[in-house]
Image (cartoon, rainbow, N blue to C red):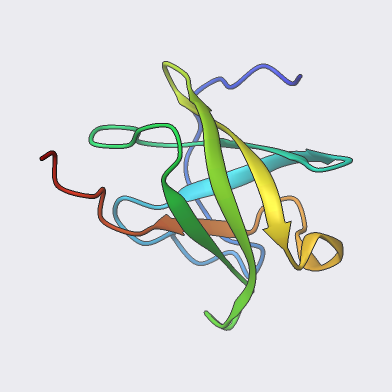
Length: 96
């Protein structure tokens, strides 16, 4: 898995990523690694992969939260996930 070192967040179009967004670092088989802010993220949380125009092109689910990013599983649209794509995660479910 690639090293998730901090770097300026920008999308494939060169525009800054949305606040709270993560950027795809690598896609290997069904695994997607991304770097960015992880506060509030947790395993089993679902997210959307956005293309350069901001359209949802794929869905992922967090497998593991790391210090500077996440390891996720592609659950739909894996073939459309590219390095540098933006990941946005749905709000975590409330605890019972």
